[in-house]
Image 1 (tube, rainbow, N blue to C red):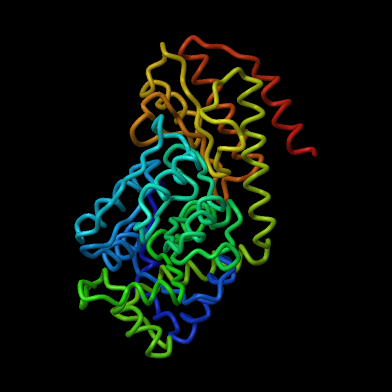
Image 2 (image 1 turned 90 degrees about the horizontal axis):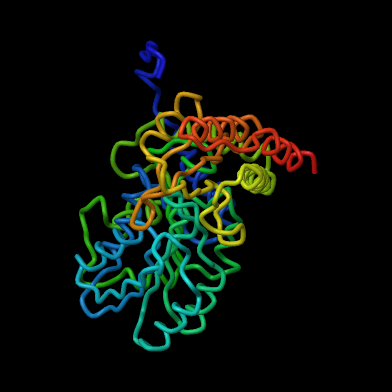
Length: 366
């Protein structure tokens, strides 16, 4: 990071309270929902923990889909609150969950009351079959919770049409906004399930506190002391996104994903999953067995790329090419491919680089 004087960020004026509700409404529009939207003054992991903690109780059985560390954390939070949790882990790990496995668990456990999953996994670049899973849950009257932190803006999210009860989003990925604020949409059915004796109160993890102090109070001001920088940044990110249009933003992510994967295939790289199972945010690649991942990543970073290690069980040989948010552009994709090819060459694996760039250019010329 450049050595700059950041003092101009001090003494920021308070964010106008009358604009909090407008921000919530704009986020609701992105999620395509008329459900209540809570603004959470923290990174989305806290919002996810608040959802799990507020719902969890003894005697409630939950089906928690685990395709990355984020899903595992959610299951742990539910267990901490006394819930009977079935963790449905993808096999093999770091892959999308199979819809047949979800159907089997719902059939074998008719007392499941809640189902949770991550939509798009930034950890490994996979995409879970959201619509199919939600449909199965709705047929059985199961409450649904979706972590859409990475997918919002990169993949279509239709909360009301799909009938999703709780959705957590964060603006720091595809929306290219700040990381220190997040949001939760909550359906009427979810509010009814949140009203129970074990629900936390007087806590930053309490959704009922948020309801009373924000929604029931008329959405005039947020509870606690708001961080104005985060909300000014969120407003600016939404201004930019709305000027482009959410459909165009999603299309830009899909184009960046296609260009990245076409170029990698031309280079001879082994993609982790096929395109239908892949997230539009990052592309995961399996390195050859004789390449040291740490050395590879060190070399890639020297070229100014945004390539990092995949995260979680089953991902020890994977690297991720990031094309999320403002990085979903031809210039950023080209920089990643150039760095990937150069790092391979330094590790003794040369490939047809010009063919990779031709494939990239072809994707963007369509």
